[in-house]
Length: 113
Length: 111
Image 1 (cartoon, chains in turn blue, cyan):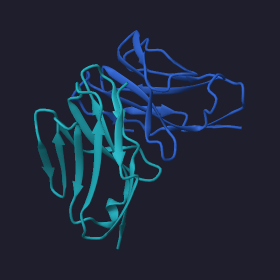
Image 2 (cartoon, rainbow over the protein chains, first blue to last red):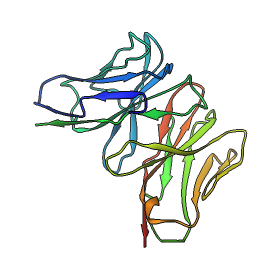
Image 3 (spheres, rainbow over the protein chains, first blue to last red):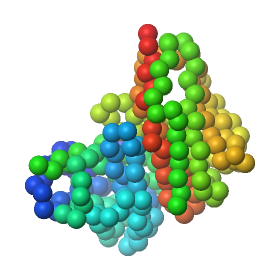
């Protein structure tokens, strides 16, 4: 998976349940990102983290939470407060910030039943 | 807030023709502009990028141009082939670390 592993690949959730998506990278990258992809809406930024123990909200952070306790890990929790959680979630990482290449994981598809 | 607008949303060309996708960005501090290609069911892959100190960059059939004054950058694909069919995303990033994507362009190359 190019050094970034997302799990699970597919996840089904009942309404009202929280679910956590895993993202692990072994690229020694400083920065990690979570994007949500819906048909026709591109990639929308949920949260990003440039260093351990620090993260910032993206454009659609409501209903989501993250943690960055380790450099290699950036899990995303989709809470019951997220109104429309069914989507494809992509994790990415890169060295530092600014003009550095972003590498994506294979994604996790969440379906709320 | 920062925004990236991408046009067109869909583009259909004949094999061998050129394709052009355009993006505009709002954050004047943006200094890095990558382009990604996403095939159906796969992760986005970087195809070319440009930094703010460069006006144009070319890699075989793909080129990107940047106009910092107009906050505008474009992807040019020449001699298109059926395997170029995919969704293409532009993006803009600044030193704050935030990287924002456009809405995507679905390119169809007809044989």
